[in-house]
Image (tube, rainbow, N blue to C red; front, side):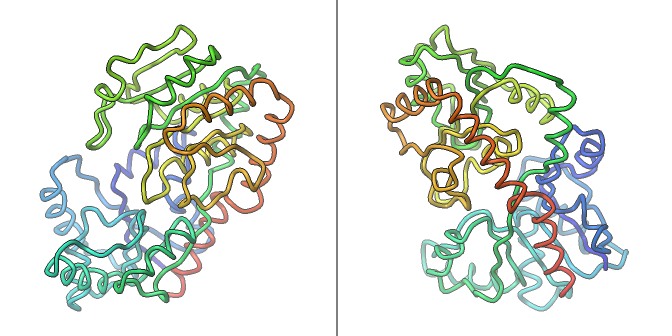
Length: 349
């Protein structure tokens, strides 16, 4: 079997970096191990344009002019291939389309937009979701078709993180670290750590999407216990080495309707770190139920202070949380299980 593999990022570059242990394989959604299931791939040629319309036109042209045979179009997101999906809905594109749907399917605003959206979803043969909650929320929409919706056990590339840990050698893990950039609530996190005086390595962006983090933290004093670094295109492998020096991973986010923070949760589980995370009901993993972390309600500065102090004063329990997270990743949430879930569906098509 052969698939046309579409990723919103530069897959050629990322593929090389994965082979060099610089990029974790789970961010390729199974592609690194499809060959184990007899699945060959045509890799989409990336276009770095930031214009959505230019990207869509380019992708449409690349896909429609592909002369190599393939059986399924497999995409990590639908951004940039919307025209292809509409063509599929109109029976003008003959290949089945399988995508990852990162947010719940919702009712569009306005009658016309909703009618267009219903046609759009007819062009998607199957969708993978990160959690049961995302599926259940999507089923509230008439556009959702249960037989086309699937949950995959998305989890970390354990081999990648084991290589990171092995490369680093023996290190004494100390303090807390925050590395995520999407929908983050840096303001609450900084205020909480200012009150604890405990060490935090904070990696942040100036901007992510429509969120201006410079404005978010403007006027907030950053204590001497916080080492704040603006992310400057650090490779995931380099960042993972820094995470490996910490004793706890903290994930402070704003409320969303999708699994924001999941990538960092996966990293912490793989590296045996306890997790402090803003409560997100869309997550496939209940970190408190699984005993690998503590939930904190959004914007609850006092609860963050309490959780940070608990981890600092209960080092043995913190280490046990990290071990439970790793065991959960080894059992269920890992790249191998993810690849199996996806490959089984692709092979059916």
